[in-house]
Amino acid sequence: MNYLTEINSFYDWLETNSISDSGIVLWHALMHICNKAGWITEFAVAISTLETKTGLKKGAIIRARQRLQQAGRIDFKSRAGQQSAIYTIIPFNDSLCSIKERKVERKPDTNWNANRTQSGTQTGPIIKLNETKLNKPVDAREKLISDIKALTNRPISSRDYQIIIGWLDDGVDSLVALEAIKKAIIQPADAPIIYADKIVIDWDKRGLKTIGDVLEFLKQEKKEKLSKREQDDAERRRLTEEYDRLTGQQAGGSVQSKLPSLCQY
Image 1 (cartoon, rainbow, N blue to C red):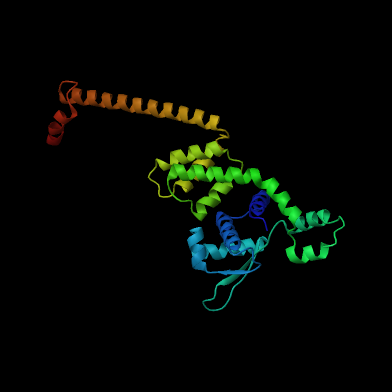
Image 2 (cartoon, rainbow, N blue to C red):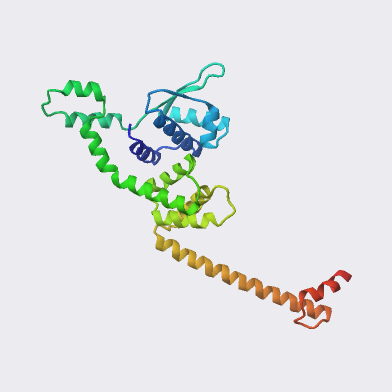
């Protein structure tokens, strides 16, 4: 199973299939666990572990895994007592790999049977093809993650990693993602990547696809905020003058000098 190929296929699949945000997060967490386990067919994982990796509550995880099972993306078997459920990831590309493998192996080869026995569905030529095809996306992913680490000065969590991969899968420009990170880290937020994701989603809804679009939007936004501040300042001056007129005090006096008068009323 190829991790990045499966993720890309998953997001292609989401274009025509509806899964909740909880289901998407859970699928990523199960893929991560399966990858660490060496892509074994079945693996056990505790609900508490999934809660830590996804940030979801037990009830949300149970509902999400049922939906993923119904959609044909995972299978799981609950067990009695305190035993963890056993999960199986249902891959997208097994059949595709088998077809490619057969095409490559058509040429005469005296070790054909031995090669298939030893390497299963993954053969040398297929791996070489995948590495060539995926070099560019992997480089883009690693560079973006490295840049984000430098900006946030903090490690990338499993959930952060899933969000970043999601940006790349959705075709978000890396420079746009980094600009969102810059805005997120100046906010009092404990999870800047999650905050940045909200910014990226907002910009996408506004049709801001390139860094040029984003910078022009931010420039206009800054002008509007400055204009609003000037309007607020003008309103404060108007209220001060009105206060002076009503109290009979000289306009231009300090606010502090008026406070005693205010207390008398």
